[in-house]
Amino acid sequence: MVSIWFFVGVLLFFYGVLILGAGIYGLSNPPHVVLAKLHAEIWWGVLLLLMGAFYSLRFSPWRGK
Image 1 (cartoon, rainbow, N blue to C red):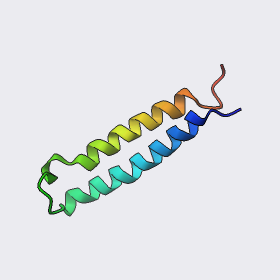
Image 2: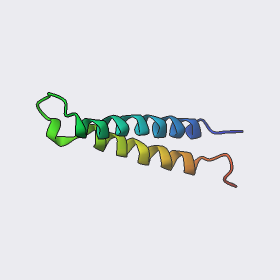
Image 3: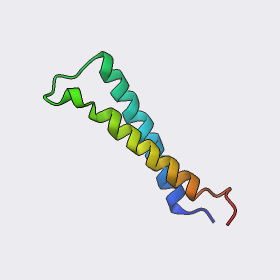
């Protein structure tokens, strides 16, 4: 039986990749918003990647219990 948290981790990881990619693209084409210099997309993407990797590895169906 596969834990639902494994799928949550995979989704978080996937969304992290997408948001981080958008943030990296935003470095070369900066948006016209007030707080663009904080690069929130990059921070948010990295956070989602880390959380997704944690959940995916912690609740992996291949990991023995």
